[in-house]
Image (cartoon, rainbow, N blue to C red):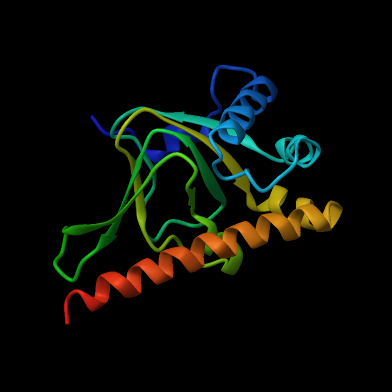
Length: 170
């Protein structure tokens, strides 16, 4: 049974500090989202992050929802879906696994969610909400710039992959 995103807004039962610390370290070791940060920077960043765990089928957000956070996938996979022109039909446009960043575009431009995201496996996420994102950039501009660079590289890579996929249709 699908759980609604409103049910996901509560934090894990684990202590946020210990969860973030553990997941950051796990993510770092896997060479994932934070591989470009040193230990000192990772420690600074962790104070801005939240922690979530999703079970299979849980929806983290739906297309059109307001955008109030982005997520770093530490473990598991998210199915990324986009509404089609046919009512009630969605196309899977991506599967994001460990090391992926999700929800970054709308956090940058303030638009509603462009896609839906659902857990395909049990998923551990680190989250960065809009308020903490703005605080990070204001208080730690060098760290914020490095994070933004990582986000830009992610978006750039996805765009290049989309170009490659589109050319297979022509």
